[in-house]
Image (cartoon, rainbow, N blue to C red; front, top):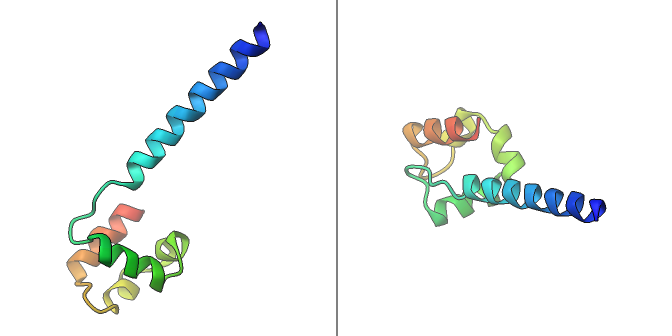
Length: 77
């Protein structure tokens, strides 16, 4: 019975953490829609590459202004 309670508490905690993480990932960024998001992820080969990019790297891309790049950088860091 004790093992069951421990497993259930662990499952409950993990489920809550996953929901919170999924919610934070879906938070919209001003100026970045579905297509631009997909283009950014493709260009930087995923989220880790995008997080490593500087504001200057983001501005170099077509369709990304300095204002959008600043918002995106602030959102990721």
